[in-house]
Amino acid sequence: MHRGLSAAQIDELMERACLHSAAAEHFDAERLCEKCLRAARANLDFERMARIVLPLQEARRLKREAALDAGVVALLRTTADIPRPLVPGCYLLQPPLIGRDGRSLRETLDRKGLPASVLTREPLTRKGLWPIVGVGPMVIRVQVAPPWPVERVETSVSKDEETRLPPAAWFSAAGEALGDGAIAALAAADHPHYRVDDLLDFLDAHPAHEKLHQALGQACRAAIGVPEPILPRRRGLDEPFSF
Image 1 (cartoon, rainbow, N blue to C red):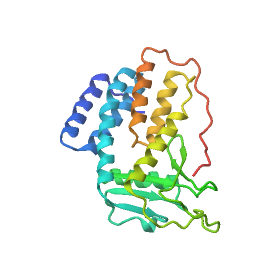
Image 2 (tube, one colour):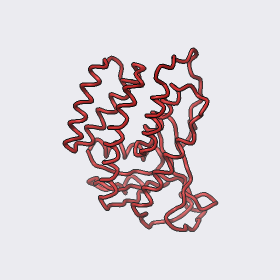
Image 3 (cartoon, one colour):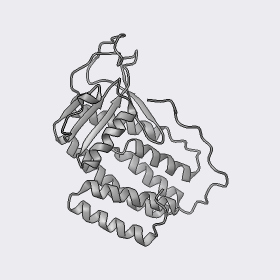
Image 4 (spheres, one colour):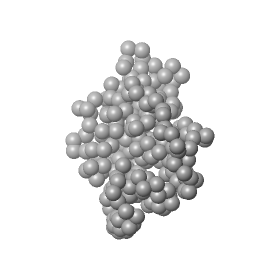
């Protein structure tokens, strides 16, 4: 976490983030908002966290809309399929590429200031669904219908040989399903601080989901004034051998 920032320093950085937003510099606004969010969490300042979530959500919403509006869809099976140079748009990774590859590509696009929607799918299931995965401190996985019926091919590493490019509307719907799956995985009985931490981890895995941000804002407000847990949290790694 970003320790060492006072409340006044966080507020100063958030003023700069707002200036970046006003200038349509959404990547810079997002970067500062995320830094402030982590610093506020380190300070147990859940009230300030709740205020930071909204501008962070807005910066990411505008990035996502720009990616969908770009009109570019790329299907990637290997790193050789990655466009050079990279461009804004929608990127679908499929086996043998894995979730970590999708995260790495998303981070590269962010560093270059290119708005993009990046999703990673796993092999077609026997029910004809594509598992979509988001990788971070915790793994998110949901199964969604492909844009159209897909024939199963047992000899293929992806269990199909689909080469058609999904429409942008499918990317949007699949991204929504991934974030909804993360919210559904929250444990209602967990300590409020733990729910905040889980949502931060889920957003790290899948930052392009508005309802995850809204859930984090609600969790932060619920954590205000709640004493810290007495015992340290014990939980196993979420699917440590996952793709």
